[in-house]
Amino acid sequence: MTRVRRFAIVCGFAGAMLGQPGLSAAADADKSKPAEQLRVESVNVLMSQVGPVVMLKVRDKAIPIFVDLIVAESIQGALSGVKPKRPLTHDLMHAILEAYAGRVSQVVITLKDQIYYAALTLVIQDTTKVFDSRSSDAIALAIHFKAPILVSRDLLDSVGVEIEKKPGEIKL
Image (cartoon, rainbow, N blue to C red; front, side, top):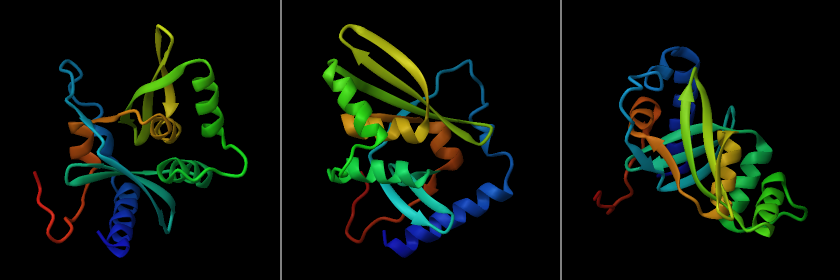
């Protein structure tokens, strides 16, 4: 996908978000049945006219999540392996957790009232705890720990934007 195409998708999504109030309907859907969880295949950080956006790719769609510049830098650094001169908050949290034999085991992203939330699951020794987190912080930590990021099929269907295949790419 070209940068121009990505930019167009992000700008289109931003316009849709500003003009469509019912995007959280899937998040408020029938809670009696568990939603199928899908694993995010890749994460990209892009710049748009409204600021940095993290694209969570699942199959042939991507979920755009707008983030602040510092978190975007932290996520991009974790993706590329480039370390900043001084540790950012996510780098510090990663170092502290590793020092105590802790790790992020998974992150689950949800959407409610047009706000993204994350359930950040930490494992320290034999104890597992789930913490409410900003989605951007949880994504950054998941990337640092190479932990899976999960989204529901409903979320992907409701806010995911189609991404075009690369020439010669075969969809499995």
